[in-house]
Amino acid sequence: MTKSDFFFDSLAGVLHDAAIPPEQTPWNYHELIDLIEENGTAIRPAAVLIGLIQRESGLHVILTRRTEALRHHAGQISFPGGRIEESDQDPIAAALREAQEEIGLLSQHVQALGYLDSFLTITGFHVYPVVAKVSADFIPQADPSEVDEIFEAPLEFVLDSKNARAIEIEYLGKNRTIIEFQYEQYRIWGATASMLVNFRNRIEQAAST
Image 1: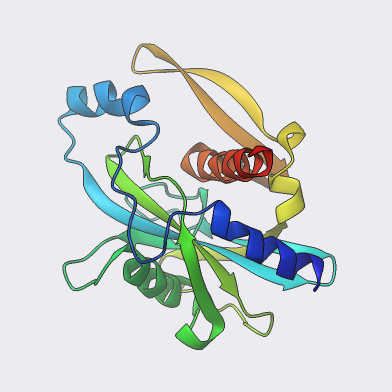
Image 2: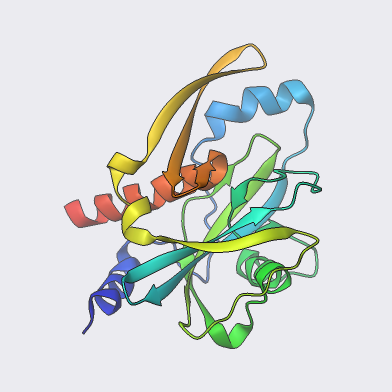
């Protein structure tokens, strides 16, 4: 068994079951609900795909840099994903559909493994992060209307607590803490960084039990 095979097997004790989307309140709900209520923003369901792909140097996470023309999170580093539509069977179906649209990820190249804890964004999206195994022969193809660039960051890098920096900012008159990673020229921050930290925390908790 390879190191990556062992890691994927261990995820069974880390992730929520792929058959049942997590029903609990988003883990950061109490940090943001005051801002969302003050802004009168409706909470909308969304899903993202945290795709893990094997490379010679180890597992990598697939990330995108969004175009500057988008309404939400323009120019930011993010996972493929978006709003859950009525036609989507569940959050996994939504994440896979969005990944196909944004980076050309077809069903034969991906296996959904399960969910991380759900997350609330400052723009009012209740996000279901779907962790998935992506075939090494997948060739990304960006949709230029949504994605400017597709790149991969080593999983080992984003799961290393030393690479996650907490920053205090003032937003709408209140102090907030955000997380950021600096990987090469890419600043990974906000919701994407927080979900990666949640991934690391769940792995650490599972290892300690």
